[in-house]
Image 1 (cartoon, rainbow, N blue to C red):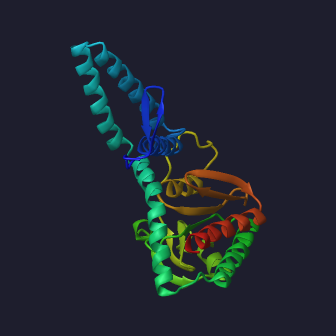
Image 2 (image 1 turned 180 degrees about the vertical axis):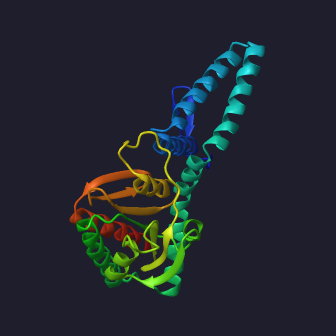
Image 3 (image 1 turned 30 degrees about the horizontal axis):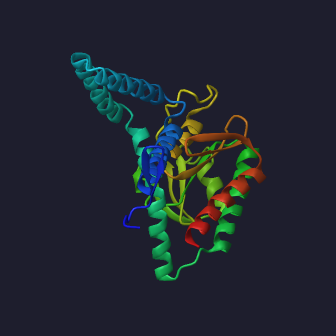
Length: 274
């Protein structure tokens, strides 16, 4: 074969391996955008822009110059407006794309330094959290715990009180005690430590969230929309557990289900490292 690029013919068309790769990448990007924007106002706007784009190309093909120019201007301005108005969704999309790269970088660094994931420490962390939320649930004490897999948590913990304390059920119960000055906010758990307490988190503006959700649950969803975290809440009204991940909230979880979700989160990290 004289050609360096593999190709095959379909009728009168010659399709190269790069054409197939191009289609797969575009399809993947469209799917990711759909997942991030689904159920939001931005999704409807994107559909409108896609419609305008199709119509503008049809008009251009029919050589309707004036109408084509007007529609192209609308599409261009619409894309700029979309980036400005829906900056959080764009940020989430970039975070999703960057997770794989950051995970690979962390993998190489840990292998280079010879550090292995401390399974026993993770189990101890999970058991301390479970013991604490069990007590908080019985007393109907509201709580919000954010588990970050990234070492860099300063972007959303700077509003609270930095602690860098060892995790224990007694300390968590004390923080969320209604008489504690730190109870009205989120606890950030990172690298098996209580990194900060009384943190103010961004509140989700997703219109599809149930009306009965309070500020604590909306903050859990909000932080999970923009950051790769798992947010665990204890309801002050019912004592029930909820978990927010990737902008989705799962309510009315049992203690065992919470344990499984936490273990799964740490197992995902272990798979990345291995």
